[in-house]
Image 1 (spheres, rainbow, N blue to C red):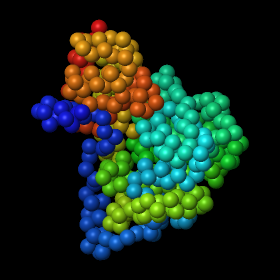
Image 2: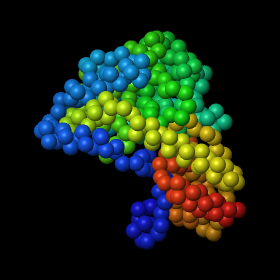
Image 3: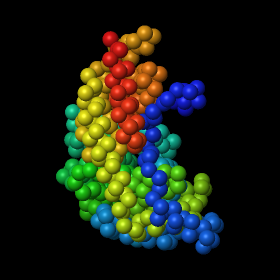
Image 4: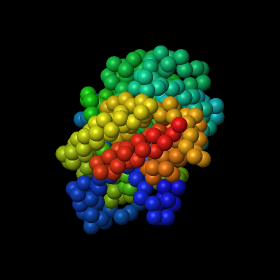
Length: 376
């Protein structure tokens, strides 16, 4: 609808995309061009080219205290495919998958696609949208097959710290038949303490799959490159699944991704610093809007305010009953595109991406503030 309104001549500010507004760094693009010139234009092994898989092994060891062999790495056409591979390879009909909620929108449907039963466990803004160990423990049943979460989190920007992940690991280690899927795609956009991977805890390392990719930290969304580090039996199963769908990811893209991992992260850190400045600016602005409940997320590039105080209010023909109504009202009245929290399992909220220019961000909040002031 935002695109349709734009084609009609309206000035639409889009804060709905989970996509960096930066271009891929030049040294990565140059590596892709070099790979093309060197003939990396053919089919690749399903699990990935060796230079990239070796770079991923080194990256996991260097950044995450995770010790994998190359045979435990599978490169996919985006981290989304990595998660789908895992769901299709591991789930039988009726298997339960605990999903920390709010969740990235595709988790729920990918689990259903694999025949599993999503079991959301929810946390609200009062707890910075972070599920507690007690909630996890209470949700586990005899049918639990997997636990799926992201840290830093899309859509909330929440980050689990060492102690919190340690508590999860201690609970899950009591059931070594449960597979932990840790989505760490926003690892490099972390404004607080050092990133921690749950797979680094000894008691759960053999039941953890660490999911990552290049879209967020390297501004490579259109390159479609994700990967997992997993127990070898799981990695082999995922390669079998992928081999029947897409086979391997693009050759020259993989060579560029290997270069990205093997190079200094200066451009990645600069992007993170910019996101941090934008986050602080956006929080300062959003806190000035009456009835918006806003926390201070320590990662990713999203803010997930609770706007439920506007439910039941109206303006003209607009009646706000839920987050979808609110998002639609803001699109039509303020010409700002947001995402309803219902898509992420929390209907009290909206997701705002601040992967946009300072000018667009300031103008968007100004418009939102003016629009909600009309609601009574």
